[in-house]
View 1 (cartoon, helix red, strand yellow):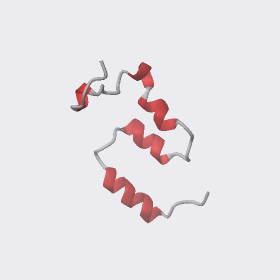
View 2: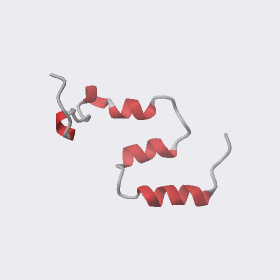
View 3: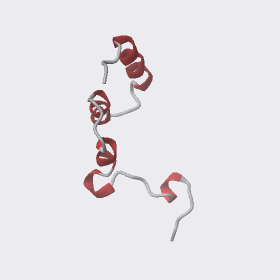
View 4: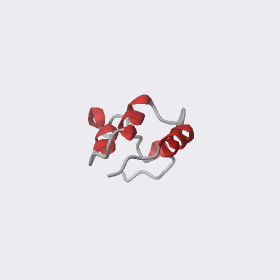
Length: 61
């Protein structure tokens, strides 16, 4: 994989500034790792993932 140009990195960081927490940005800045974002999303047994009803969707119950 080639290195990204510094201008592209700066543009991406500017676009995302303030939207993602530091832990997610640390993952994004690292070389691609399969499952890294999924592991972050499911940390603490998925306690941080909203349910369908919390997102305004219908419940499967």
